[in-house]
Image 1 (cartoon, protein in one colour):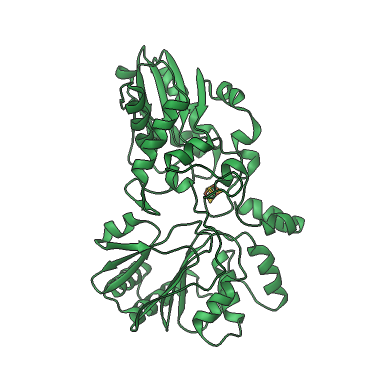
Image 2: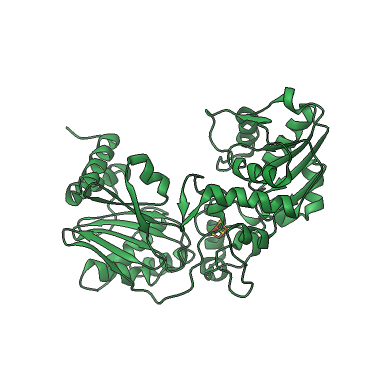
Length: 417
Ligand code: SF4
């Protein structure tokens, strides 16, 4: 009897946990076949891929591959890598994968299950995280340490930027096939993307978020009665702001745990409804008070408008908004699903116009230098130690698809983001 996707996923996970790579590969291959509705990607026999991040030259490579006769089954960047591997003339799988990855630009944390073993690789800049863990005899790779905690695995170490690790019956071997460059890990992982209990590049996400709140209190103090987080991602920064300023921390907004994140829901209408379903004001606490609202970021501004209005409707005397990241003025092309630039509020308005738009009594963002200080660093303006492009426009790779694409491809890129 044919197995369904869930059974195959469970079989693959159990096989990985037991260190049975070939059995896991068979289950994943069958799962991929099922999910792709019988479409066959041009992989050599026995390879399956999982990827985090986005490539910034995928369309250029896709056009080149198309001209050479490659036929694509999806819009996935992973398929570009697969075609590059499939068309490489190198002898063994590791060399073919290395050959493929030397042609791509952008961010990727990649895990490939092959006949020759499990391969994990992080892009040379280390934009997206990748960690290695251990569960019994099995070696586990995951984007965050929290994923290891969930399955009871222990953390071994980060996969280094530009490192390629092969795990098979011969043990664990590390390779460094790329030219060494200064790493640029994504700073937004610490602000929003990672779970607070994770440790990213050796640093506790929770502690960094509290530090960001403390720096924000130093940079943008305000007279107020309560510090109120926008749940859940604003909570650690609000604790830091409260502890630094001495203003009491209170849960003035209660979040329903049954509604998904508004940030990634597609339509404006759904986002508007989502905010109302997701958050409720604690009116008995808020009424007559001067509130400092702490949120992680302002992207389109939709949520901020609703939350400030919610505080006013609940009887807040003043509403001061403080944001735990600098203004988001640029799109991300490395796998964080920010909208195109035209929809970013900070790309259209200065801070005073944004304050007016969200109807707050005051609005302030942490500075880019303050954000680095919260991470224990001084930002090097000539060569930033992290990717901070969505705040500064200083992209760590070329944006080939934006600068070289034909008009149709460029539009497709915008739509895809
Ligand atoms: S552009 Fe922003 S979100 Fe994207 S990788 Fe860089 S810092 Fe992270």
